Image (cartoon, rainbow, N blue to C red; front, side):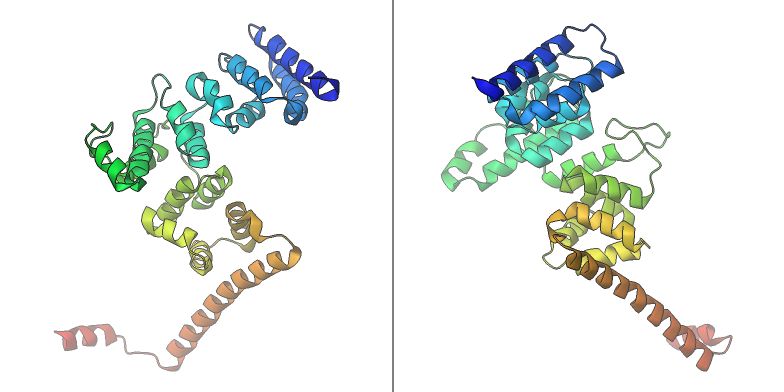
Length: 301
């Protein structure tokens, strides 16, 4: 490797090597490595990235952004971090599985002391792949013992959901470092993860419609039901737009698309206001007697 690319590669490797040789890197040294390595990342070869992933996988401290870049590479680069790095928390592993699917999931399954729920999630993905295979291959696979027994995808989702909710004692499970977020904060944070499953869980909890209904709403081609769900939570236009744009960033390529979204959302609020005013006017125009409810009950009986 020659020229500018070769210089970037050597500098990148030298910075990683120097950082990994530090017994206890300070916060300043972690920031220095991040500031140096990230601008070079696009100029580094696959071999250079593999070197960095292998070296950083043994570190107790490492730049968060650099770790994320390496983990989001193909599994042949990311594998050492996925298998060994103790800096990756359960929520990180689930997000990576959601983003990259089975190849990353298989590497993560090799982690020592892996959370059993995540191990079950990997098994569920394997089962789903087998179910989609040709009939002959599926029949052969069914003869082999399954790692998850009678595990189903819905069962796994429920267990993941339980992990993400605060415990009764107020302690925080492994997946979450906060347990008192408002519905909006949960929706916002899960929308920004880039993995759909946590958002489906958060929306299902906030609206009390459940995971499957929330997933159906989010995945629908027409987003009117999702807008209605966000509106039902009393979210302002700005908050609804933040969540929606995090979920569907490609929908807002220009100002007109943003203006159209705000107009649609505002129309929901105006419709509610008009309906409420109509109910109040009707009630004032024809007040019912005090015992109206009782008379209806007597007629029904």
